[in-house]
Image (tube, rainbow, N blue to C red; front, side, top):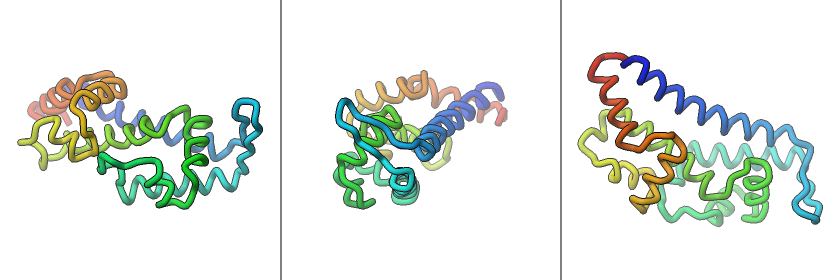
Length: 165
């Protein structure tokens, strides 16, 4: 069962690494073009936007609000919704909701591994992490992890019960 735990830990590590790698790639880019209109993004501007988004998401955890919108992020970090959207779409290959849901899924995984949520249902945990639809939560979780939330939780609990962590 240590293997199951290691696989779960690797999945979380890999998802974070992929996101950070993409963010670093965006920091190092020289700009990009959107459709036929030229949209030049200066390195300094991109780096500042990425830093502000990352800091805000990690420290303030706004994604736990199920009504969190791109406008809220815009107001918090001082960039327009259009600028945020351009960076997310053209550099990260994500729309705003996919970006936010990555943070929510990571938060669910962390909660599933903590003692504080043992008595909660999977959906109750999802609600604490910003999801407001059971169907969306299950679909997004499976898309991001390759496992259903129940499979993920059972695998983790089995690895804990056998002392394989």
